[in-house]
Amino acid sequence: MNRRQISAALISSIPGPALASHMSASGYSMSVHWVGLLSLAIFALALIAVTLEEFTNLRKSKPMLFAAGMIWGLIGWYAHHTVGGEVAEEALRHSLLQYAELMLFILVVMTYINALAERRVFLALRTWVAHRRYSYRHLFWTTGLTAFFLSPFLDNLSTALLMGAVILHLERENQRFVTLSCINIVIASNSGGVFSPFGDITTLMVWQQDITSTTGRVDFFSFFTLFLPSLISYLTPAGFMHFAIPDGRLTSTQEPIQMRRGAKRIIGLFLLTIATAVFFQGQLFLPAAIGVMTGLSYLQFFGFFLKKTHKPGVTQVTTSESPDFSVVVESRQPFDVFLRVARSEWDTLLFLCGVILCVGGLGYLGYLTLASELLYIQWGATAANISIGVASSVLENIPTMSVVLSMRPEMSLGQWLLVTLTAGIGGSLLSIGSAAGVALMGQAKGKYTFFAHLQWTPAIALGFTLSVACHLWLNANQF
Image (cartoon, rainbow, N blue to C red; front, side, top):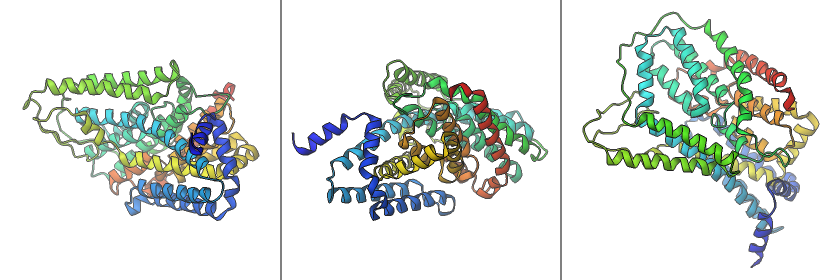
């Protein structure tokens, strides 16, 4: 074995927590070197570019991937001319492995959602709601509560886009109703995504990682103790907005649309995929990504069945007004699972890649060690985790949670659930605080804006405060 292979074998044998501390120690002195300071500035500029996506229309993955490349390029140059590049190389590989597991998980979930969209499940839901001719207040609560209970399964981003499409499809003319409904949907989607590992990328990140050397992974069912706090974080601002909803009701006369063949069975396969992921991680102690990839094979086999039994000309062509959930499939074209994979939200996946690599680089440089000492030693875990939630409203909750996980602070289960809660609902304080808010701003095109959301930030902040207080009281035995 050569020097590189020996070094790689030694470093790969170090457990996760030890590797993290080793990386921080190796790069601690670099935090005051010009390489470290320049890397920190590059990351800050990338975050600013991400928050300005609404105004620049520059996809958030572009600046974040560029920043990741520049940061690790600087680290590699410095390491090559000082201590050698083997440790830096293994630190980078560790970050890539962390991203690969998360990316595979999210990709399968997105594929199932796109398959359900192609089978017209979401279109059928929209027209079913339209056929009921609800009042504006009735529709406000129906879409909000649906988003809250749907996001634990679909994730907050997909749920916000779906329910936003429902609102925009049913009522485009009443500006005030559309704006309030979009704000309500973002809050509900973010709150509902907190109490399930599948509800938010940040929650999924916590579930998939060995958070401490003593606690290990957070159990799947432990997240459900956050149900009541997350419900309070949604109902509080929604209660205030209820009185601002204008009078009136829907006038749509569109008839319900039937789902395509196999739609209900794909829903069942999606639930089976979730159960498979939980079983692999909870009972077999394997990464949940292996479970969801097994679940993807369920959809592939069923897609093969749909393709072999397809009868051209049976299904009518139906298009949707929503660009996010419309898939134009001619009746002569059978179901193709790989087209559903291609329609995944690749900007989000690549953005997540850039975030994890950037945070891994800052950890190697020693900045996460400094931040952890300030937040979790000087401030204390509770104050630190609450401040993390507030910061997520500006920095977006994905990079914020990635920083926390890379710090690997020693905390109780209750504290890990607290930071999961605050990062999720803290993203609702501003429209740019979560992927759901950013995506819905793009979908609503001027009807839901940053400043419209900002008007309701005090009510959202009250819900945030009451939610945190509820968790501290209700789950006190976990601290």
